Length: 98
Image (cartoon, rainbow, N blue to C red; front, side):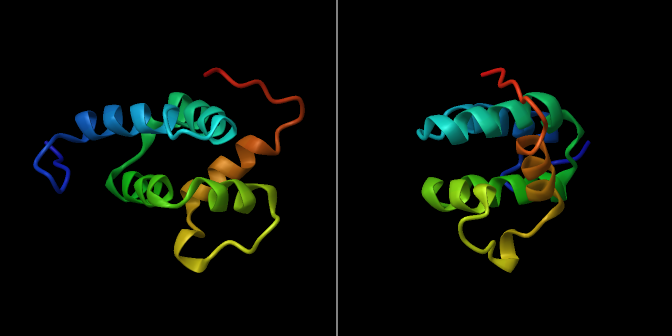
């Protein structure tokens, strides 16, 4: 069984990430991250979970500005998970499920 750094299973970590994605406190980012997590968190491996967790620890205003392309994305956050979230935002006529 895969384990997270805190000793929990990967499944538990994914559930925690899903919860955190839906309740960041910034409605627009909640919708984006919540939709991403509902669709994708089940397929994330440990590295993907680490990348998502790093984004969850970043300030909401910064994350939203990165997603909109208003400010440059720092190299530490330029990850495959961020690219997948950004792709979700660039869909034609997106719907948000949170």
